[in-house]
Amino acid sequence: GQQLNQSPQSMFIQEGEDVSMNCTSSSIFNTWLWYKQEPGEGPVLLIALYKAGELTSNGRLTAQFGITRKDSFLNISASIPSDVGIYFCAGSLNFGNEKLTFGTGTRLTIIP
Amino acid sequence: DGGITQSPKYLFRKEGQNVTLSCEQNLNHDAMYWYRQDPGQGLRLIYYSQIVNDFQKGDIAEGYSVSREKKESFPLTVTSAQKNPTAFYLCASSIVGGGGNYGYTFGSGTRLTVV
Image 1 (cartoon, one colour):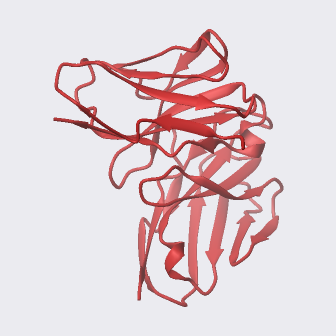
Image 2 (cartoon, chains in turn blue, purple):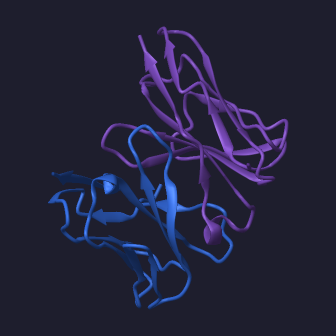
Image 3 (cartoon, helix red, strand yellow):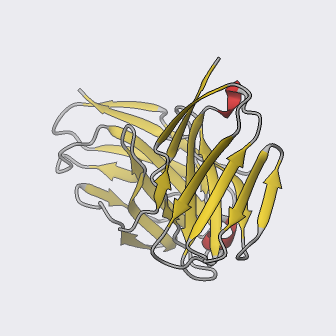
């Protein structure tokens, strides 16, 4: 099955730094979602995007729906230790389609 | 509180044995899914179900079986035919037709280890 290309695969950053990651697809999506998975837990939805060009924030997190509909970006400002985890993007091919396509994940590690 | 519950959290299985992982949700979601996650890798779809008594194979269904006798429950059996079953298993649910818009709600996972 298809998986979205997510980069970088892993990041090692210092506390307080900003983080940027992105997700690209060969297919157009109508919905982009960003999830965070903490160690030993299931992913939790962070942000949902529904329109090309849309920019949505959730606290220190900001995500954008690319205008080509084939990519999305997630930024985390002023990282803190609890930001550690794996971040997954997910896309929906059709409006109301039940199955999501997931990215390969970006593992974020914060160095004290 | 509504949610999705997976049990047990940790499971050990001897080679050659079948084992069943439980997944229960009280969100009134129609669709349920099983994913497998290996270390450092993404999520791979095993099976999914959009309605009671019906389910579809995902990308890696070989060696697994499921049932959907009740809307709330979607147990996964890892059979002895699964050659490399050690992994983290995640169950999820969503509104039918809304999975693409509202996303999935995930359980907290079951870590299966073959000993």
